[in-house]
Image (tube, rainbow, N blue to C red; front, top):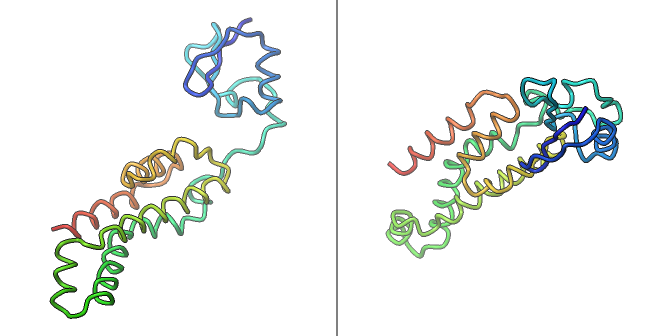
Length: 174
């Protein structure tokens, strides 16, 4: 029987069953990799088939088992960033008027931006330690709400961090 497999978003194959097992043994394919053969109605994860996955690494930790400190810091990053902006404005200004002008003009917005990026980056590192494939997350680090949404979906946790971030972001700019 011939099999097709998915790799990096591309359909590969057809290959023999032995080749699929070799790709599994060589860690080219993992338990979440999708395969298809004429006996399947749709693509299946390798873990849903009869292939031997005993040599593969264990599955990633579930969302409730991951250390979620950074995701919660990220959820509150808009407020943390505003506090940081105000602190920078007040310590660098020569008087209160100059500080309030700098705050009003968002002169130190980069502080909020970097707080978001750093917490996102730290969270991605945490996910990687928990066994998750983070390659698809890295391109979204600069678009924090998208990253938060995808992260919640991937780890199967509720959308609370995403919702909190969006509400706080809107609140800080109203």
